[in-house]
Length: 178
Image 1: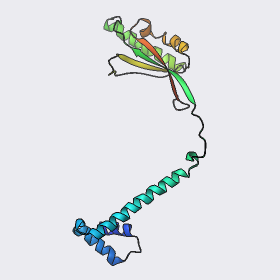
Image 2: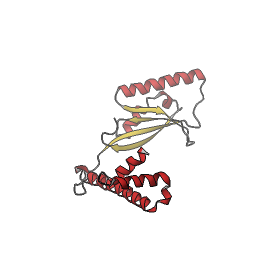
Image 3: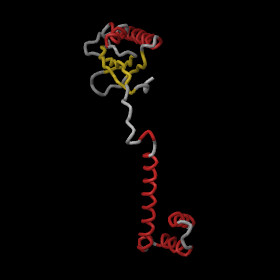
């Protein structure tokens, strides 16, 4: 009952007559559907509160200097990277497990070297559901595909044909990828 009284007080404000609040609480408590007048009043007050809140929030965001419709927005600037998808081709050479383990170690060592030299931003493997057999990806800190080809050519798995690189120039909003 106290909860319903609190709802009534919030909906009707402090100036409402106590008897009216009590009647609303009784109505809510008894059978909300049977009290048509009270139901409509309560619904109106609730809807008005929601509309006022939305209007206030909209007015606050519209008055913000960053979203003013009269302020021209600066053009978006981009950073460019080369993304390399590493695909396992159908004709990749088969190697014994011991050789594959050594190749994987050399591949990881090359990734670390490229990263330490500031050439590689991110790298990692994929779980490929596309059917293309994409094994991993490099994001390289260059805008030059030729430079990216040179760096990727140092990878031992690429050198022997276990991975085939595919190159893409990727543009992201300036400063968002570090």
